[in-house]
Image 1 (cartoon, rainbow, N blue to C red):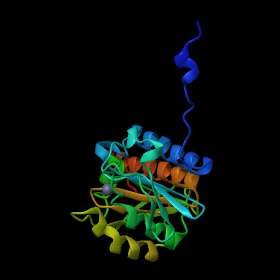
Image 2: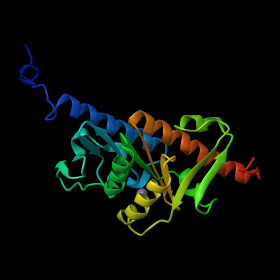
Image 3: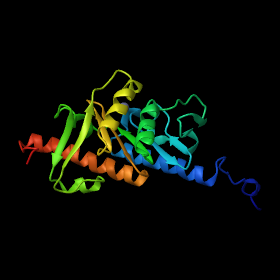
Image 4: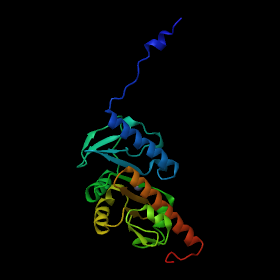
Length: 223
Ligand SMILES: [Zn+2]
């Protein structure tokens, strides 16, 4: 006998357009990648991607590795919410900070990592992180292997949203940088699209880790 249940099974369709569904799925996948790297543990960190006239953003204070496509917020290019998931989910605290990189740098994706490498790198320097002569610098647009790469550091605040003004000023004052470190907290990184933002974030994180190890080994970062 044919299974009635099998015949009655209705194919589940997405309530989103194919392009929106694809971006939402990509964002969830990147959140899982970044969680595995230790950049988004304890619900920390955040990520957003621009697609046409919309910015897709992971919600605040949730398990980033367990996000579903329907959990994502969609904003317009001025930062106004155009689609929200409901169910008590809140827009990321990083939203106004992400918007600065979109507006000032015309970024295509912005992410915020709570990486231990980024947090500890801010304790090695005063106003800006500096490293030189590292091959992985080539992964950051505008830098060669024998340059000195700098990333400005801003002071942390009690609430993420309070970082907005200093982040805005620092992005404007450091046109060559694709990242801003936050003292004892993490880093904001962006790129012209999600692939470049991901590449930048991986290269910066490698350089933050390398600087920490060099310091441990007593190797000068000025060499
Ligand atoms: Zn944070």
